[in-house]
Length: 150
Image (cartoon, rainbow, N blue to C red; front, side, top):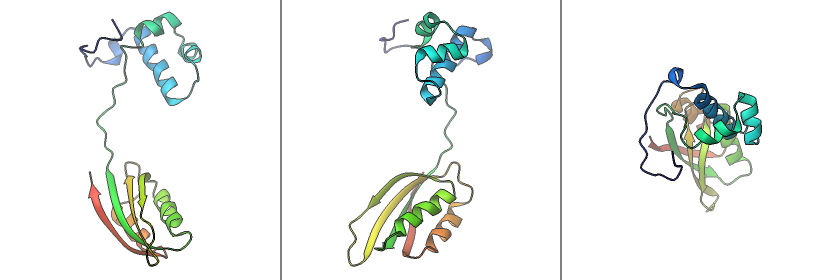
């Protein structure tokens, strides 16, 4: 199986019928991808796989990720240009365990700054509506709107 062949066919196969060497190759690749180990040697040692088996299968084994449930929400905020306002907004988002993806802030004009923040709410511990309400209570937040969701 050539690693350079771009016209390969793929199958979805249950893990429980795969040979152990292929399963261990997938486990080793996952350890490397997550940074749990630093070298291929460490990875194959940890999963008890030979280096030759790893190299034989590494270009043909890929993890299958279930359909992503993540949702991205983009907020538009109007903030007063005072020290700590944006930091307080970001801290509140962190308290809700939402993941900030992007922050775009315009240059403050006449004491006001426009900020767009995109978050991923997959692991958020509350509703977007409650996050908006909490952000609206922060001193220096003049206005907040949802401008996009997917």
